Amino acid sequence: MPELPAAALTLLETRPTYAVASAGEHPWVATMYFWRNPEGDLMSAIKSDSLTLAALSTNDEVAFAVNGPNPDVFLQGLGRARDLGPFENFPEVRRGLIDKEASIQKFLDHVPKLHLLRIHPTDYYLTDHRQKISPRRKI
Image (cartoon, rainbow, N blue to C red; front, side):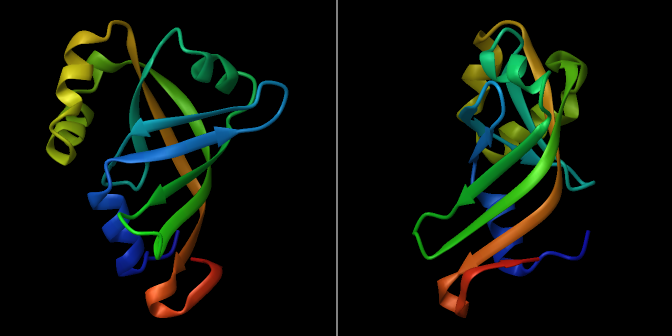
């Protein structure tokens, strides 16, 4: 994957949530907190008994969007999602999520049976009206 432009990196590093969706037999959409690991994968905590995770077991292709605080810049992408198992086995992801957005700690501490969802991005698309990048551009 090529180096991402500054606007895309800023969104990935500062925005706490993203919308993730999938089509197919069981279409769904969810908003989740995420952390981008050093390898570039997007990591989220998800309830192990959620409909979202169940749907991913039949179709791992996802689309996602990371929006800025204003509608002038946003990042969209495609990727493959995978359940990596019990969240408690990944303390580095817990730390990354809390460092990025401290308010997620209550969720992590009080919601039982969390699993780690990893999205490996395959494509990114950036819209940045400030830089005259519209319609979106594949990066």
